[in-house]
Length: 292
Image (cartoon, rainbow, N blue to C red; front, side, top):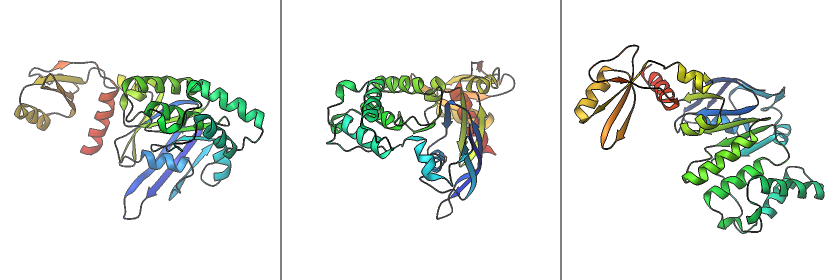
């Protein structure tokens, strides 16, 4: 169990990145959703011992992650948003080197661990290839391999699928789903589909505040019968709707705007009921936060 209580962080210049974030996260995949600048990366860096909070605590099975940084790093696997590699080193050699840094000193144990991770991340055939020649998806899979070294109890992945093509994204998500059963895995992202496909629990944050925490399916059920859509042909009609109703989102479909709104009962005037999805939950909570 990862327990986060009252985390606060304000950067020089007065930007409040976290405003009393409190969460309880059990083993499994946990999605952390929010727009760019919401505070997701700040929270991840605090949990990864890279940043000191101004206030609050974070504990993993009783271990103080803030005060006991050396002990925390022994239990941590981290794939940051910007993950660099030594381009001239092979995947096998760099993974072996990182294993030494993680404290895996016994050569036979290290060899077994590195080879198993290369197989698990489907990089075995590329193990002798220089990392500088890897595709974006291969680099991300290598990032997960290094994050899994030494059997971590907490794994943090920050915006892992940004920039991946659809095929690489699917391979990467399948890999994540295979590891997120017996450890706490936090997936920080602004891509709703990643959370919908992987996570049994989630939270939405914006401007450093926690807006929602719970199961994605339960959150979607909360919008059942309250989500309505309408296709509009002109910007004038779209702007009129935005002034009249709580708009969840607007999408372009075939050059026309599909406007989705939240309403307890039918807004009338050409609106039809539609099934809510996790994207509706996400944008509805962000819109509520902005209005309040």
